[in-house]
Image (cartoon, rainbow, N blue to C red; front, side):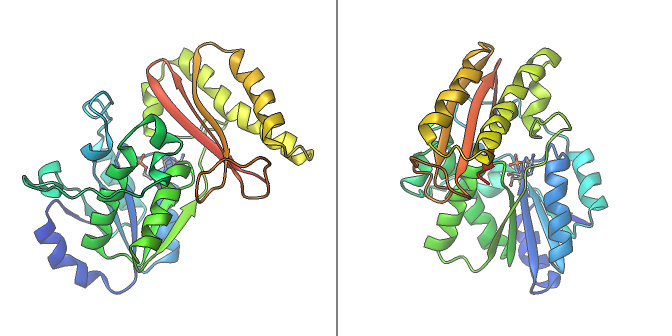
Length: 277
Ligand code: AMP
């Protein structure tokens, strides 16, 4: 695996990777969720590029940029083991040199779900992903379904800006007890982790009710809120039943409807979701 940190090196190497290239963008602190993306990319494409970049533009000043986990050596080990051809790991100064002023807004969708609670977050995500698409020119880009609102923003961006690539959503990887894997899980104490299971448990309850034929968002909300309010350790940010592309609420869930949840446990913000059966 070639490891590079500069755009100059990237420009030099990109043509040697051939026409079909997968991109797996990450912020590092890699876990089995990331591995599943890398694995799928390796299976589907002739060459694979991964990026590790903790993007300052998508963190608010009050958020966890400085303490975001960084495990570069272990990450390289996983990338190498998954057969990645190129790792691009730029510095913030490389991506945002002084005088850089362009920010990409994916209007409307960027203000929904996590975008509502984290103003500016999705503009930061869209800007960095657009830059990576321009720099790396992938034919395929792999993202996790776990970040469902991010997927909606990026799908819209790919459509609107005519990026010539296929965006592929990969299923959420979980611990055996149901907790969706996240780099932020390592912030949780053992005690907090057991409370964090309420997110996936609530989604599983909703899924079971959907299987039983309960489709009304109102009914599903009422039952989910009953479960959620039983644990004051879990501070709900949102529970949303929405169209997966626009993130606009729907009155009743149909197959493919996105049911998404975000909550804080202690100081850690967690998200999870399911697509209605
Ligand atoms: P991050 O490093 O958190 O920016 O995540 C990089 C990519 O991995 C994103 O496309 C995420 O959606 C994806 N991802 C994160 N957690 C998981 C998971 N548990 N299962 C599948 N994909 C994931």
